[in-house]
Length: 258
Image (tube, rainbow, N blue to C red; front, side):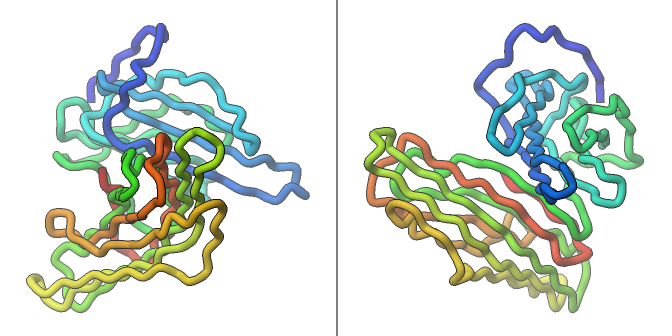
């Protein structure tokens, strides 16, 4: 990756790639606050970060030196108590890694990982990956969430729980729909050519306003099993977002899908 400092003049509001965010929630009895870190890739492939507290009071966007050619991946590692940012360099193949402290402070510690890849980075192991995506400004919305890479394994499976919140409104204060719940995801492979995937919506959910009627769709992204989320609103929205958090319940890498 070619690291390049850029002037912090203004950020082009048209962002490409996946908006990635992680939320850490800690006990208030310990005096900890909720921290939300968001990292995005701009139209110039530059990296930008923003932190928000539990009251959604957010910092200004600040530039992270360096550029990615595809969407960044952001994970929280409880073992080292740091966020880990990974992605593909501007050359389109080199793999890079850096870290943030729990308060969102970047550690200026870019490390090149051995190997090369033309695709967005997948992150393995139990833990959390999270994001925020538009579901489109139509009543029937959808968004790709994730896929799992079982590779050439046989008689293998991978599971995940995806906690989601859908927020939709048409801006008049009268029409709004909110839903929070959980998607159960399961992928399996018996042979190299015999793969399957399924998903179910947990019956435990909370709805405010109109029901978004959320559903999940098992699908394939390339050769990897994955899942998308859909809804069906009773109005045409001007804001239509899904926020989600993935718990990887396998030893296989998970990829956030664009």
